[in-house]
Image (cartoon, rainbow, N blue to C red; front, side, top):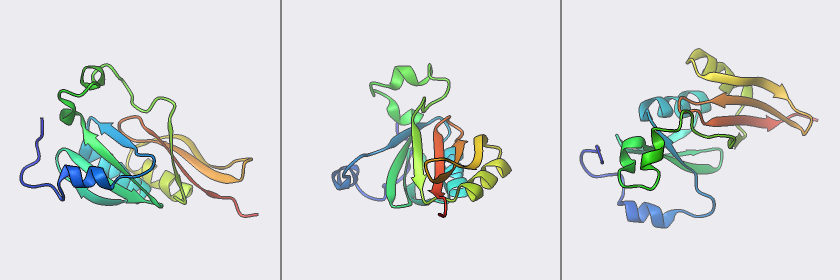
Length: 145
């Protein structure tokens, strides 16, 4: 069930037809908290948001978030209430997102830091951060050589 009032930023079919390559769509039980994480922790641009949907851009990628209530009639509708934390073992990586800054922002806002910013043997400095819905975000930058 849609909760948006008024017209969206563009017709859904126009947006859908503009998408290319790998698409990521997160489903959120608390869209406001999800957007706080995106904007304040990861520092990404919110292209558009309303009560139902958000489109985001950062670090050369775009992705979207839909609120749980928009999944009425969707194949996942009956499963959403049974999933305690979303994301499972999927890592959503933001290459170029400073892990030290993202970790600090996450801690200040009460988000779960799975692993602090650490230089890894494969040449990246990474921080593993859970958003409010349980999606695992990895902020990473190359370790200087």
